[in-house]
Length: 306
Image (cartoon, rainbow, N blue to C red; front, side, top):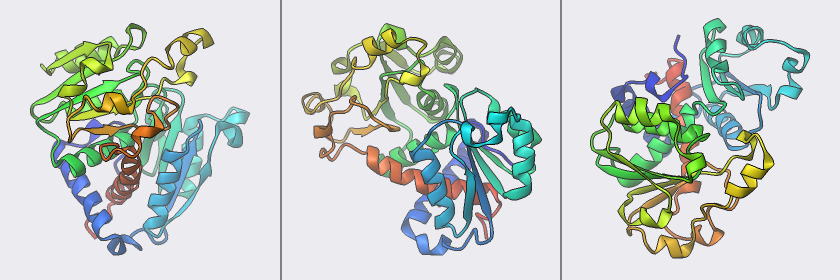
């Protein structure tokens, strides 16, 4: 039995195989429509989610399986004080695989240690969001044709953005990846990412404050939301929430084949007039998330080769 806590749980070879499977699912959905007949996915979401929870549910339904679960801690026995360890022991009696989102870093890992079914980390605090990373990798590879030889800019909340931390960890395993970190001083990437990941692996990177200073060199721009729920006070959030807004005018500074990604939801960091630009790929990214989660469910249930 295998779990997914981090994108690094898969080797590069395994990751490429998973992405190939996702591409095949996109091209031939009918082949996979009954792969999970009789299987159940439990979605245990201790904090709100739209895309992640619904795309997991869509993925399992597309495979012919069924879904059960809860969408907030208030609607589970966590409200009565039940531990994650006890919850997953019970869920293991009802379902074949579990996707868990939790505000506390490491909670899905604790669950995986007590579980009798595969557990997927669907986001834990500001720590990791591995399945979003898989969707990001699939999007980049499908549209750009490669995951190596790229310059990617991460813009916005790089301090609390778990999607950023996960994607950086995954991308540094590919050759000739250059990273540009675009953020205000208060939201710079944490030291453990800068020092233990980028510098420790001799990855070429630079930090800038103005988006305009980086646009022209990027193959991929990864925009992020300034996350109100991660701030300790309202004043800091209000001061920083509009620091970066991607507009049509700023897009004119970019390469013709640059792509814009965003894990969503967006607030106002990407102007709606950018949506019609063919380089805006964030809604395609949401669709790729379903394909890659289908591939992941099949892989962890041992059904990928059937």
